[in-house]
Length: 131
Ligand code: FES
Image 1 (cartoon, protein in one colour):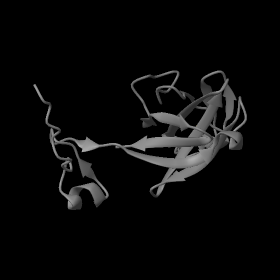
Image 2 (cartoon, rainbow, N blue to C red):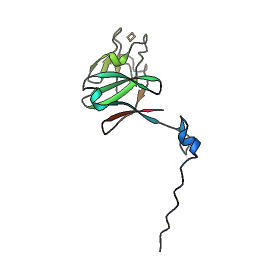
Image 3 (cartoon, rainbow, N blue to C red):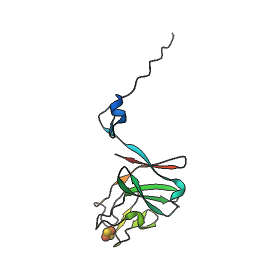
């Protein structure tokens, strides 16, 4: 029996593929992968504040694995990307609140969380997935 190849059909109309929020076929918003840094920009054990689509994000390198959380501390808005990193715990430079960079959860009260984002490394590029 001869197999017939289906013609290539776009998965969504072009206006959905180019809009700032793309919608999957199941009706959910698709995450946007945004390049925020090069791997060499953030040394192991360090953090850096990066921009992604107007958001300030704290990007951390924990032993070669990258994590991203929102940069703004929930206490008084301190810059978490400038905090001291110890394993996966970052300490806010302003008053010392601590967060797990893998989850965004406050160390003393895990119910208090900053947003965390998936991070992908593609070649030398570090990309953050925004909802
Ligand atoms: S602003 Fe972060 S601990 Fe106060």
